[in-house]
Length: 287
Image (tube, rainbow, N blue to C red; front, side, top):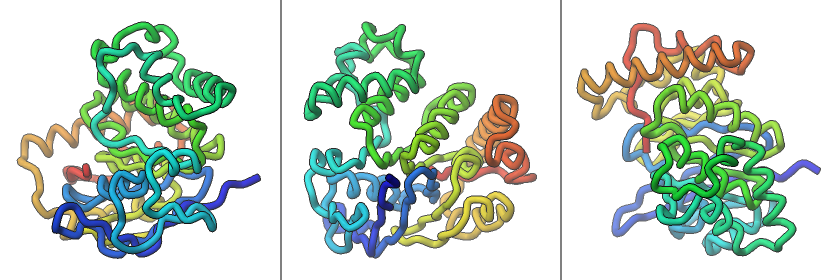
């Protein structure tokens, strides 16, 4: 049975005295990757925390089909089938990898916890050899795998990932790309916030661009891949990075694109990645 869509309807969220999201509406279909792009301070991380129940919307709704998840506590939202992976790879550093994964199963029945753990390790076989290692000693890529595994143990219908590749080497990002694709292929709807537009758009079916807490573009990922000028509009060029940082990001994006194409030439968007921003520096699309 196909899962219902996860929809945001006119969502408004404030942080402190400042409203950050202004009537945001978007829809995440099951079994697809949806990309959410935008500049620093656009409100993307706020959106993830609001959907996950960490922040309370001041208006609007979060709907899983007909089920209203708005303002529910995080444990109820997770139980309903929506998992979030916040930015920053938040782990318990002194606990082992296995204990970090098991902590995420505390509210699940024993059978569901065992099944979820098995599924997570199936998607991340590299963690099998690291189960007894303290989380603090893991590489950045391994830590990201553990955080994703924590979200997957509840076998969610939807998973929202804030900054998959932040701080990771391109070769590590390339290893994570097939896992995101496998999640969608298994029926999980994925909302992917990603600093490298080529990575996100290579995986996504639909895409949104947010700026100033408002959705500025809603459409297909292929249109953004084929028309990069849509990404390089004025609102994405605000606060552009210094030349050195821009050049570094350009090199990293190219490396990720090349790794993706080499690993899976038939992957959606793989052939488009290297030419997505011809002659231009990619902007920092984080947060």
